[in-house]
Image (cartoon, rainbow, N blue to C red; front, side):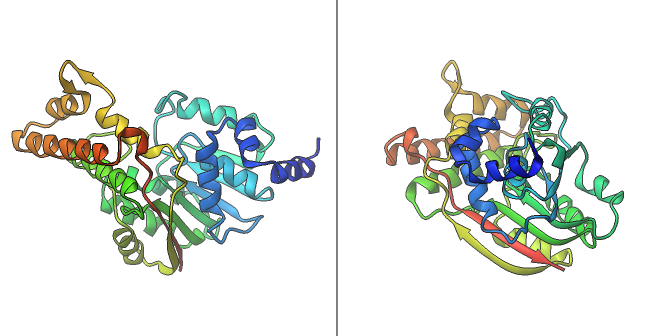
Length: 293
């Protein structure tokens, strides 16, 4: 079957069928498509995706823009992640009809960009990957390295606010986990630098970019991330102690921090009870920013 016919079939396919065909979680795929449709990406653009992980957004990009090539980079080890590792997921995606338009690269953004020609991309995209950065300096160095290599920089990240009480609990959960990881220097957890939209904008502007426009949109009520994050706090116990607090005590020496995090955990539990239980938590809003040089 020709590439053009494949592209036409993929574009007309309902999102849930795309998800089933390409090994994606339906609500995760719908969420990323919703975000991408808010961005000014043109079919045929050369796209650099920073922090591709298991390739959920990579796949959505290739399906939405059938004439584009996607370079998807991530520094994480290929055995990172579960239940499917990065290496397994990326190898699977390469077997699909969209695989020839995707290049996966295991590298930090700055290392990759050193070997990239000026104007190599029309778009650089970060979709729910910025919180993985270790600190503000790492964010700024990446933004600086992108200058001259891409025309546009697009960022989608959790907004640290919500239009609903159920989404506010997700914000509370994220800050609890982030406070823990901030005291573990070598952490590999997924929340390391939970920057707010205003902090992200300042980092990008300080790196020499100009904000073109930004907006905040609500998440799909069925999106699973908030439940996953909550499960990392409350989902497992060792005797009478939550696994989260066991991790705290194993990796953080200061008892004062133990007390702070234990109090935060109790506050999360109270908030969950107030919304009717764990099944009622929703994802917070998402912020989208578009920058140019």
